[in-house]
Image (tube, rainbow, N blue to C red; front, side, top):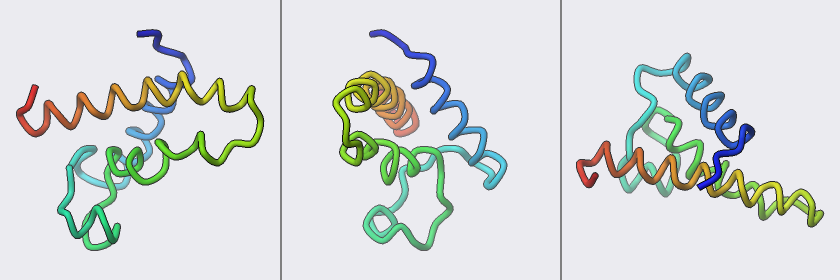
Length: 90
């Protein structure tokens, strides 16, 4: 796997921003929250689920989409591993 500076920076900035807003950076969240996005604190994992993993589909140019591909893979691997470890699956 190739870790891009921008992908890693995205992870660090998301975790940093949210750590200032709440006591935890990770929580899977209840099914209700995952559908409504209401009723629970917004964590770094939720930022990925709700926003960051959908960035590529909003881009219009091929160079931007290619750049997003690498970053999207870094984020996906990081947050999937984080979820697995937090839930005891890894």
